[in-house]
Image 1 (cartoon, helix red, strand yellow):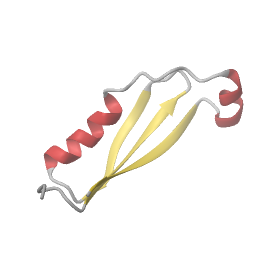
Image 2 (image 1 turned 180 degrees about the vertical axis):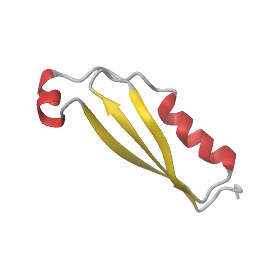
Image 3 (image 1 turned 135 degrees about the horizontal axis):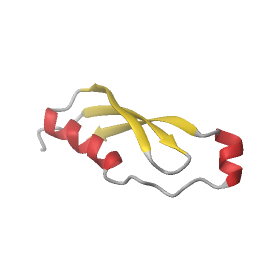
Image 4 (image 1 turned 45 degrees about the vertical axis):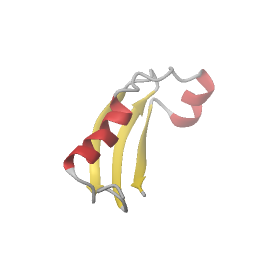
Length: 73
């Protein structure tokens, strides 16, 4: 069984309407340093995302704070 099983990492970040991200923060982690860094990297390495449509900007504004939870099972 993997060493990181039953661990959780919670990461927040700000997604901007142009597809870039900002303010990536690990809110909590019960995983080791490497597993936590992998979760951060999963977000950061995918940036930039596609720019938002005009309709999305009307609904969400210029940015949106998101929180992702990663579970190692």
